Length: 202
Image (cartoon, rainbow, N blue to C red; front, side, top):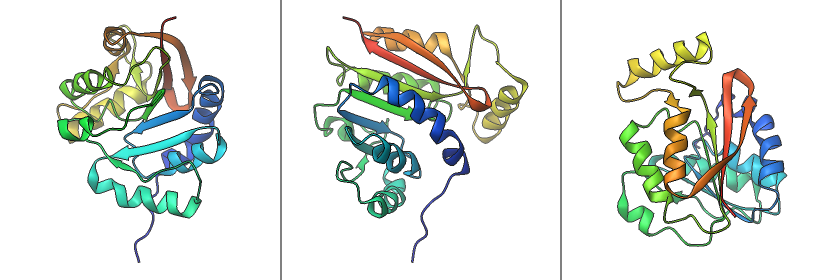
């Protein structure tokens, strides 16, 4: 019998992320989570925020683990996870319509910068007149690391793959602005992470 995947980082960062989502997703209804990983956040946040339909997604090889978490949680507003790879145009074209928010955690630094750009290009099709985007993870500001631990983490990422790395906030904010979103919150998170919230402007 397969064992559910588990991330201690998801266990630690879940409560502070949830606190931010309680405030900024209070008026949301249908969230697409991109890069659901183990599925822990999907199960936790959907249980804590029952007003949301929480749609998990990830690359195909991670879907079975996500299903284990969702099947165990037995929540009414968590449809089966979707296959969604930033590099697969067909999967993006198959996405249902109607999301009013997107959430993603710890994804931008494991993508290449070209893939981050591709992600925002795909998000353009989801943005409506009433839309929010929440991204959690480490960011540089003014081209500088915010801590020694983030510098060490960036070096570790690059040792795994030269195209990985902590992204510059200003560059990501520019991508968000390019699809009609404006930064509405920059929340400090534990371990030198941030949660950035963008929304369509009135």
